[in-house]
Image (cartoon, rainbow, N blue to C red; front, side, top):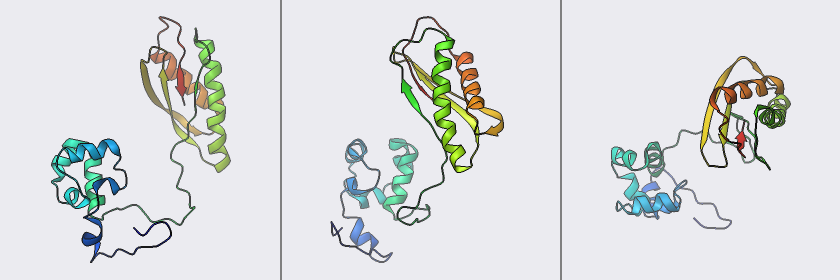
Length: 185
C-alpha cells in the first residue's frame, strides 16, 4: 500500500477499513476480464465483492467467484511460506510444436520419446515418481483433445512414460489427414 519499499500491517480490526475501499482490480487474481465482469454487476470495490452473495458470484465466475469472495473477506487457507521457498511439485510437463506435419505413428513416437525424456528427468532429479501420464494434442486445424491414464507402477523412467503417452495417442487419434501438432506430456 505504501509502494515501493514500505510495509503495511493490516490487522483483523482494520482490514475492512483498509482493504474494502480499494478497487476490485487490486485484489489478487482479478485481471482485466474478471474486473469487467464484476463491474458489469456493480462490483467496483473489494468491499462490494466481499458483501456479495456467494451463489451469484459462483454463477458469474464459477469456483473462482467463491475463491475471490474469500480473498475479499481476508480468508485464505494457503500456508504462509518464506520468500524463495518452493512449493511441492505436483506436475511436470513439456510441449512442442512440430516443424512439419506428422504423417504416422512413427513420427509421433519420435516426438513423444523426446518429450518423455525431458519430463522424466525432472522427477528423477528430485526423487519423485509419476503415477499418471497426460497428453494434449492439437492439430494444425486447431482441433484438440486431452487424455490421461494411470501407470500400473509409479515411475520416473522415460520409456514407461512414453509408452503410456503413445498408448493414449493411438487409442484416441485417427489419421484422416497429416497434422502438424502441438503435444504436451
